Image (tube, rainbow, N blue to C red):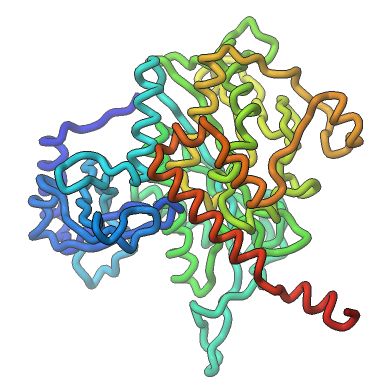
Length: 459
């Protein structure tokens, strides 16, 4: 189901396309361990050599990459990710981009490259005969830009003033972002990213554009592209977009529900027509793996202090370790089977947020599910009742536990997790944990506006 060109075919196609479209600059993209997109540009004159030997750069200032004495890195473009950037002004020569694999100077894969981490875990799945497919749903907010002293839009002045007062699936004059979503979908499709839906979400000025499911590596690249395109289109229209998990108190935050399935060739390994949920034994064990390890990998899928302002009861964010078909309060949801749609059988993990590193997020989910299959873990009974409305005692009786409630708690669980350590590899694991501890320390030692307002007048 995943068609890739050979290296020679890819090189020939790219050089031909670059000439036909008068490409001058090529952006080479990669990510640091936090999922922040990094880039440097080369000219078309360097393109052929870059595809043969890669482009050297200093990795010492990239978060989680290398120390000063080990800073030499090579960015090797992946020809399968070549795309023209559709927002290049027509009066300029065209610009393209390619994602890169990061290598050591000797040509070996660099262990700190998140893309390599995902590739490594996908190979484990492939060795078992599986291809891992995902379909994430990224939510985000549009907000108005602040103004400078002259009253003009200031891209560096952020507000949380919404563009609209619309609600879920609203299509009214209040939804000022219809054209923004439309333009974003067009730009994404021009870059080869298939789109299924776009719509207004629950909160004011909150939106969602859903990409068509595909293999996990392609999708991780697409998530990085998606986040940039959403922001590019917003800024070109005088607003800005944010994937911050919880930008406003008291309303829904933004999630990244991840639909996932395993295929063996053309067959969906999650489908079983004899099961009451149409789930195979492998699918149920996969769910059990997600439920078992979710507390340990939450720091990877919800990696920011702000992520835990979203993961609280009452705002459609799952915090309880349960699964079901119709109940959207559960951590894992199984969309209902429709006859003739066996390939669409999947499970949906609802806890990740759209500000995570998709390469690492997809890696830990896959590893948890595969461990569940390997160990034959049994999923508990599904919980179709609303878990939010249960008493603490009832949840305890049913054995329904919760996700970590803060970044600090999540870090501690991840740090003690053999599964997370083995999935990420020592380099990324240690760098990630160290970075997150620093973030938590910075956060917990800050005196906030909330504290000043609440305590300064009375203490």
